[in-house]
Image (tube, rainbow, N blue to C red; front, side):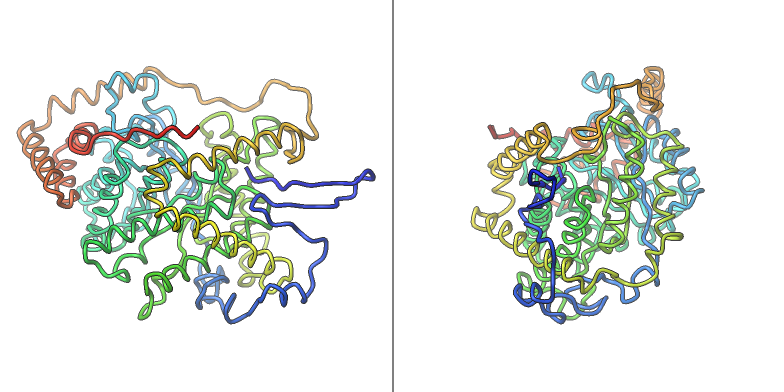
Amino acid sequence: MGVAKYTSDKKGRVTEVEYLSGIKVKPVYTPQDLESCGFSYDRDLNDPGEYPFTRGIHPLGYRSRPWTMRQYSGFGTPEQSNERFKLLIANGQNGLNVAFDLPSQMGLDSDNPQAEGEVGRVGMAVDSLRDFELAFKDIALDKIGTGLTINAVASIMLAMYQAVAQKYGFKKNEISATPQNDILKEIIGRGAWIYPPDAGVKLIGDTIEYSVKEMPKCNPVSICGYHIRESGATPAQEIAYAIQIANAYIDEVLGRGLNIDDFVGRFSFNINIYGNLWETIAKFRAAKKMWARNLSERYGAGENNKKVLFFRGLFGGGGSGLTKQQPLNNIVRGAYYGLAAALGGAQTTALCSYDEAYTIPTPESALVSLRNLQMLMDEVGLRDTVDPLAGSYFIESITKEMENLIEKEMAEIDNYGGMLKAVTDGYVQRKIAAQEYEFQKDLENGSRIKVGVNKYVMEEEESKVELHEYDEKMAEVKIAGLKELKRTRSTADVTRNLKTLEKTVKSGGNVMPALVECCSSYATVEEMAGIFKEVYGEFKEPNIF
């Protein structure tokens, strides 16, 4: 989703432009538009680095620090992923963003019959600490921050990351990991959930509480509006739902007696950069303001430390914007998505590679995406001044409209009873599935233009994209290694640690210390996830149609 709807007269003149969020764009904006929407510099903008942070969280923006480049990567075996990680780091990437295969995401080991054909297909296959040892070999984990794109078993992977860091001599208070760890968006947007929503939220609470006490540089949750947007949400809904999901996690942790200022500053976000350039920029600017206001007004956060109000995270991807038709056009799309992220004030950015509509990116296409970001930073001039669009009659007006739309969507969730209830009941899923259906119809009838898809279409020709062929032998090698691990590890240690984990889960205690011990003894992902299944059960998705 993401293209505006244009209406034209018989002479081809554009008579109406409507963004996906419902904003209708005027042909011309003047100072009167700012006056009519109640725009105030102090209240709506303020200086960079000052509340409500619409202009960014750093006073000097990108002049003081470049944005982090963290391309999404990981496939096949841990050895293959390690090779790709090192390639990207050697070429200027300053953070990792790790993809996991579907069996790992679903808490299955590579030798589970349900994993057949999926081992290492769409991400790195991880069964145990042995795999993390191979994946992160020779990587400076005290200097390179790592995003872990995992949700249902995020607590396991965060524990495994701590265990591998300590094995390689890094202290747990030195490492920076960001597990996605957002189960509510997973239920809404992707489907890789396992446990009931309340149990999933409890596990997220465990990771947040543990990180505050044991891993202060970790960001224990990355609320992922990105996937909600990919599933049919408007840009306004993407931000509204992301904030309300964050509120559900905040409420869980507050219920444990923690002070909000002690943990919420480590919340991060993953927001989509696909769509109309101006609507996307307005979304990012409104998101920073709305998050700070939400924390300040709803929770009283930030009274003694304004930094906890920062909207931090990765503006990334644009996967839905990529097309199989004319795939080289995706390089151009990526550049504009990176431009939108930079003009919107991203701290971290990742771009999809042009071939991702077909396949796992080749080393060449991954480097093209990285160079895209580097050109924007070092050649095009996006580090020259802070928030260059500030004060634009157009941008400030639609940012205010975006803010009002986000408020409306948030109020709807509050009136329903909160995000946990709305997701458990399937309310949000029904709403955005219907929207996605309508959007697809608009694409098919041409009222929303997609270059190469419904306009400027060319005759189909054989794709020149190099496909990443699935290697069955790779999966066989992976499974053989897992069997060897199970044969040589200490069965007594694994059994003892898994029993401790089971007792902790049943008693309602924080599972993280027990998970670290399980990982360190080479318990497998499925063995640990299986205990959660036995105690919590599995989520039965409501009928949303």
